[in-house]
Amino acid sequence: EIDQQVVSQRYGVCAFKLGKFDEAMAGFSKVLRLNPKDYEVNLYVGKIMLEKKDFEKSILCLKRAASIRPDSSEIYEPLGFALFEAKKYRESLMHLKKVLDENPENKQALFYFANAMEECSMSDKALKIFMHLRPDTKFGPESCVEAGRIHEKMGQYDKAVQDYEIALKLETISSETKVTVFYKLAQSYIAQHNIAKALYYLKQIQTVSPNYKDVNALVSRYQELNQNNNLQAYLMSGTSDFVVLCRKIVTGFYPDSFVKIEDVNVAAESIEVLCTVESMKWSDTELFRFFRSTGSIGELYVRDCHSKMRDIKCDRGFCISAGTFTAEAKKYVEGRPIDLIEKVKLIQILKKIDL
Image (cartoon, rainbow, N blue to C red; front, top):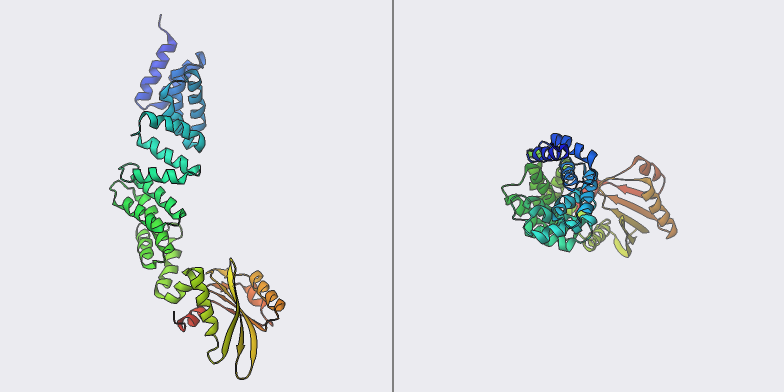
């Protein structure tokens, strides 16, 4: 007289409540073989697959349960979470909203809802939720990080710094999230040209995670910039200020000659300054091309500069970089009226410039 289907189902539910998911699956599997359209079993199997991070199977079972009982509200949360974890953000929004309509205080659903909106290009609405969640003990640290990222995208670095500083004040912040926040703070301060503050947070990362991303390279680079204001201006100033600096370099390049700037051309990768130089003994038309890169400039860019010189009948050219030039670039200029000025010589030139 004992109904094996009922026993297996109850066994599965008890095992699920105890967190014994493999045993729960053993019971539910027997039921599914007898009745694949059992609502409760499909619901619980969907929840188990969600716990096991098998999101596609979880979605399949939960959608089957939803088709059996379309009006059941207990499916909204696990299905919304499974869709979110499967990166089906737009579809997850509908179910997460139903969860929040029933319980606006469901912080996990709210956090997922905000993330899904951000992924669906609704950053403004997502930002409001992240800022609301910032004080939360569980979701606060990650919400601060997400709010900071959105503020960074908007170019509002001062507000991003506020987000990250709130995260550091939360006692529940994990060590991993703390390192992320240090890195994001450093990036925000670099964007604000506050090198000293950026270095402080980069060095904080070095003490706990020395090999984190490109921290060592950033510390090396910005320590030098912190000690050399002119090089900092060359690499980090706005376009208009950089143009002014380039003009000063050109006009100061021949201190005993008259230098007249004829034209300035601002391109994505460089700035060109065309000038005429007149001294007591000679006169020239010269083209200066300034690169802000700290890496290696290849032959292609130098060749392009030489081509421009021929087109405008320029007597001499200078390619100036805060980094270096490749061996191919150096070989190309041999026998041609182009000088390559690398970082070491550039620093010497910048020391003579009054900013």
